[in-house]
Amino acid sequence: MFHKKVHQNEQGEREINMTPLIDVSLVLVVMLLLATPLTFESSIAVNKSATSAQTADSVSNEKRIELRVVSEEKVQVNRNLVNREVLVETLQPLLEASSPALVVVACADNVSHRAFVDVLDKAKLCGATEIAVMGR
Image (cartoon, rainbow, N blue to C red; front, side):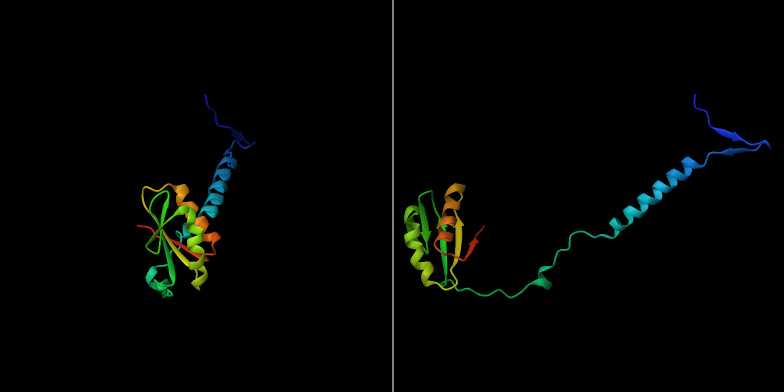
């Protein structure tokens, strides 16, 4: 059975132990002080496209090189179909002739990840300064 501790002084007055009440109150105050700054934090700031949009530098289609990985062995370089083994020999002169060296790479659905990464690596080794991956 639970008994309250009650202290009695000489006059017969009873007093309640206030220490647990003060401890609980101080813990609640500390939790409130710690939680208050969290309520003022907002979510992650995202810039809206209308206010943060900048005009993009227009790159004409003649200055960029388009690669499309058609199959495991074939790559389309500016609409010319070549084998993946001779991609470096085909891509090197084109990259040396283009000043921005922008390469846009697209991939067919049935091509493995290994073949796609191999094409990206070969483009980087040939001197492509910017590589853009085209999605659907």
